[in-house]
Image (cartoon, rainbow, N blue to C red; front, side, top):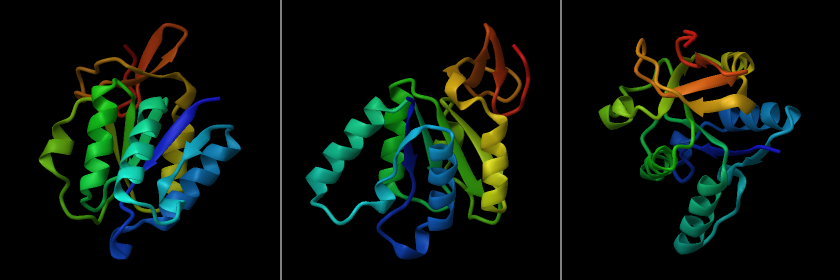
Amino acid sequence: MLHVYLSGPIIHENLRKDDFYRAVVSYLALRGFSVFAPQFFGPAEPVEIYTRDVKNVRKCDFLIGEVSNPSLGVGMEIMLAIELDTPVLLFRHREADPLSKMVLGADGKALFEYSSTDEVIQILERIKLENLVFHYCEKCNTKIAEDVQGQYRCVQCGIDH
């Protein structure tokens, strides 16, 4: 069973995307993935949260992040996953404020824009999530691809390598 880490703002109610979190967790559970979603955990002490979340980023097979709103914790989770060569799939609402250039410049992620949670699920359905690997795409400058019998397909632009 593959493990997925779901990253997204938690603390500030106005930054949370609970509809996104619920839709992604539901979809991934139906596909048989184990999802760690701290958005649905109760309050805890800062050291406990840090230790728990870092442990789960370290053991995940890939990370899905909602980045429509800035969050220091989400940035830390994304950076840790990228440093561990863990594929990162980021989602940003089309109407959100501009994304951090640090996140935009990261090459260990694929970034998708969406208007609705239905669109998020359609994007996830197109990706062979169980086959995610690091493989550089010269066209869109990402490193996230699907490995299908030794052929690599960029998950962001769809180009075969």
